[in-house]
Image (cartoon, rainbow over all chains, first blue to last red; front, side, top):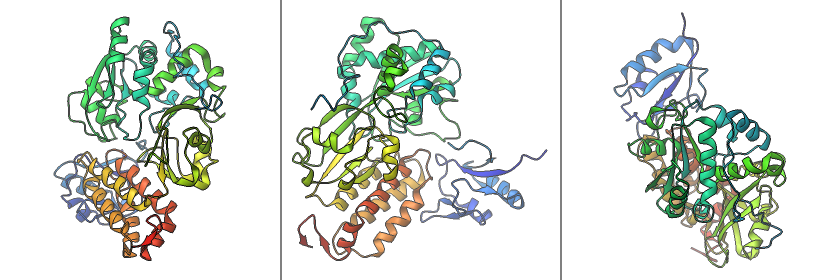
Length: 78
Length: 389
């Protein structure tokens, strides 16, 4: 069963700017002036195209602080 | 203060009698019919908050008043503490709340409300808390009340799902509670008899000036939503030629130029200016102050008030404030203006709470409303100071 369209959520209370996410997912994430991830798409929580989902999951697993999450695209924005 | 401008409801000082008992259905109908919105800043329809909360919640009355320019909750707790308690009790009964707490900020006196609680033998628990600008933010307050540090939580887990004691938690501003106390007694038609159809009722306005000359009579007034900005300023004795601009909503708010004096203080009336009534703050800037210097000082204050939790806020807000401060020096490099704009775009949407967004909004408003002043600074002039630098 496919989980459906996903987007990337950064838990800012955890993120410490390790930077592996932007390294593994440069299509969606860059690093800002201080090494914290910043969306490349202009969306707060960039949608993950199906073709990039594998890379996105690797980026999620690589985050040492579990700050990066893939969440269903329909999750209500806070 | 003229009696034609103000509408004394919250501040009428009347004895309104016993607290009405409402079922949750009656409460939802009443809130729906009245159109009451939160008076704490975000302006969310109160009925939606009630609908989104599960049964057996913890209730939190928010009288932190962590917005530096706001003084309304302090006045309410002094002049009408019973109404704030009534509001909490009405919600507690209708929602079958497990607990009801009232968080009172360190600038406020919890004495009168504690007396009321003792007289009524109410089970409302008062917490007198210190903390800065972010301490009144919903999730930071809930974490604090739950025994943790006053830090905002990740918004993926909203407090309406998991808050105090791990239970669904409803946080309602003190003024909203007091409005509910009257609404429950006098009904939706009464509530809507002042204000505008889209933004009914009264609200408390905290009016201050950057100098005593520009607002000779600062204070808190209760006026109908939709009252023109200029009428409120006139009631405080503001000499209009002396005023340069008015900050509406608070430090996360919006500058209005003096050309906007006719703007109605309602959601729809302020929307064309990119502003909202927020927590009811009006702060008048004296013509003799440099608006960039003043705004840079506010941005610096907001940077210092970061909870220090989220990287883009910890780093971005001080950089943005420093850049604005350098721009406020006449003869500044043009590149600084572009850098301010880049930084406010960079911090937006990148924090657990709205502090970076609110600060970016304030800075955007500064750059827009005082664009002419920015140009003057770049030419090495500051007309507020009446001389070339």
